[in-house]
Length: 151
Image 1 (cartoon, one colour):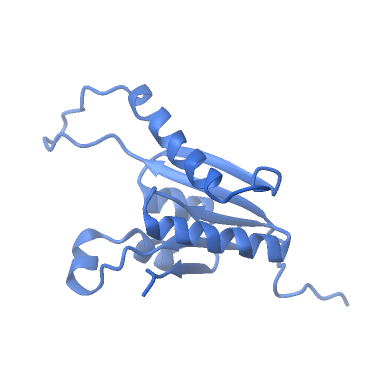
Image 2 (cartoon, one colour; image 1 turned 120 degrees about the vertical axis):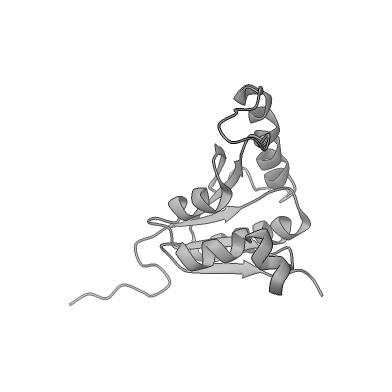
């Protein structure tokens, strides 16, 4: 009978969501350190959506091509901020068009861990804002770490 160490249940990928905020930068740094400790790949994802015009059935007059470069830049900048050695450390970068919680939940399939930052909205504000971290924590298909704001 062979046993699999709990820390490596066949999943060698840690997913982290970034949005350019300080909280996502802290989450990325935490996830990068955890990936190094586990010898796991790090998948850095920025999910983006075209802004709504507020009218049902009306599509905004913006082509995806207007937003894709900015979305890729968010991921590139976040990874660059990790510093020297980050590029060869097994990091996959993705800018994905979609609702951020849904994109991260989908990416959680087969992952060892999903890491997200928290903007610190609790109580009613967090409920009304539809917190990404809250949705990911409730629906991810693997364990979730929410990195809280610095105190």
